[in-house]
Amino acid sequence: MKTLLISPKMASGWPSHTMPPIGLGYLKACLLKEGFTEVKVVDMGDSKIESMREIMHAESPEIVGITTFTDVRINALRAVAIVKEINPWVKTILGGVHATIMYQQIMENYPAVDIICRGEGETTIVELFQALSNGADLCKVKGIVYRQNGEIVVTEERGPIRDLDGLPFPNYDDLDLKKYRDVNEYWKGKSVASVITSRGCPFSCTFCSSHSVWGNWRYRSIGNVLDEIEWLVSQYGYEAACLVDDIPTLNKVRFKEFCQGILNRGLHITWRASSRADSVSLEMLELMREAGCVVLGFGVESGSPTILKNLDKKEKIEDVVNAFAWCKKVGIKAHFNVIVGAPGETRDTIAETKNLIKKTRPTYLDTTNMTLFPGTVLWQQAKDEGLADDSFFLTDQERLYYTGAMSVSEMYRIAREIYFLHARVNGLSGYARLVRFGFEKLRRTRGKVVSVLLPWKGKGF
Ligand code: B12
Ligand code: SF4
Image (cartoon, rainbow, N blue to C red):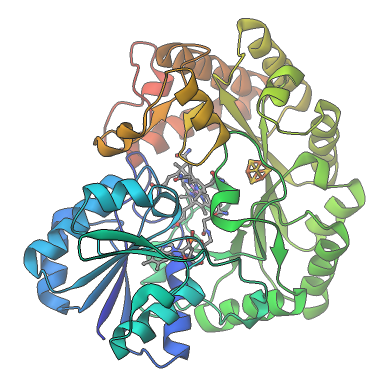
């Protein structure tokens, strides 16, 4: 069964290629392993969605699977519609976080979508392909949604994959890996591999949809992760990697083993990761630096204990202060992520966030306006407050912000203040980075105005 697995064009403001689509790489690897050899991964990062027509004519697939985040659902659904327009007999499958959560709405409103795969896709896609190739009834395939005689059928949930070591390494053979150049200044121009050492997260921050796809935290053995990194270096020539787990450092003993393993095996690779401030220690950061960690991102979100409580972040400000001080001490560049406009946000809570930025003086900083993603507690809260409605996802607007605390233009105004404050606390290098950041955004948005830095613009990136 000739199959295309497609990563649609990214949401606006993102560069065409950031990291290779690791999720589709895993799906291809699993299908190959089970004998489905005619599978090709296509990253449409730098193509218009309309070029789906040319792809269809050139490849003549029998199955097209597409991945979808909430922000890119419009591109994904448009691509599916084109597939059906060109050949109504092609089976279309959607997967990824947005389809996992909004499956009912998608099936009711987009007849071009035949099947939705909910949650982790590796086992499901193999069983689905086996059923399709044998002409078997799909009702026994767990974790899918499909139509039968006009009715929407939702099969039994599929639990999370327990044996992550049993999965093959993701397959990138169809991708031009040279295209994936990291935009961050510390790796400018290098291609960066994605590696996921664990899946899921035990926390349940109100704005985050991680648990809807991944459930509880599960992890691969360190030996298996190191084997993959070794293979990425030898097979594809990677020199840098990004750990895309939600919290790779959750189990400190395990993560130290990872760092020690990199050193023991003599793997010459620099890497970055994201984590929580309360899941690192000075000793661990020292080892991480030694093992090649250059940047560590923290979802700090706010400097206000009230806001952290409202977001159910379960983190203390003192942990944040410690983590940033330790990163500085060991020479890891810390990245501070701020959310602006959370429930309960006021000028006072913003002042607390600014104070925390002054205190921690992070090397990098990014802000995001409080966004409503489906499947989150905050989404439900906003619906209860009359601020959101599922019908938003039927529109062609990319994202909806939470406006219970302030207007969107106020969020952008505050974001701007925060970026300038961040530049100021870092002195000359801070201003230099701000200028570079502005140019980078200009380049990324291909000349569209860089609203976040311009006071008269409301719509950001
Ligand atoms: C790396 C990453 C990025 C990278 C993307 C790199 C890339 N090329 O994919 C970058 C930094 C660019 C990025 C950007 C954004 N991201 Co991001 N990102 C992640 C992160 C940390 C890891 C993604 C990943 O690789 N997962 C591992 C792979 C194995 O999983 P996967 O891709 O989901 O695929 C599996 C299943 O979903 C399923 N599946 C997926 N597709 C398909 C297709 C078919 C046919 C089938 C059968 C199955 C299937 O099977 C796969 C294997 O199990 C996730 C968090 C997370 N833990 O997933 C957030 C996450 C996906 N990002 C998120 C967000 C919000 C964003 C941004 C909107 C942020 C912003 N401020 O703008 C942008 C949007 C960018 C865009 N696509 O347009 C949210 C998405 C929420 C939502 N409802 O959409 C997540 C879930 C984070 C979170 N906890 O909230 N992101
Ligand atoms: S924001 Fe981070 S810590 Fe909170 S639930 Fe999501 S992944 Fe877990």
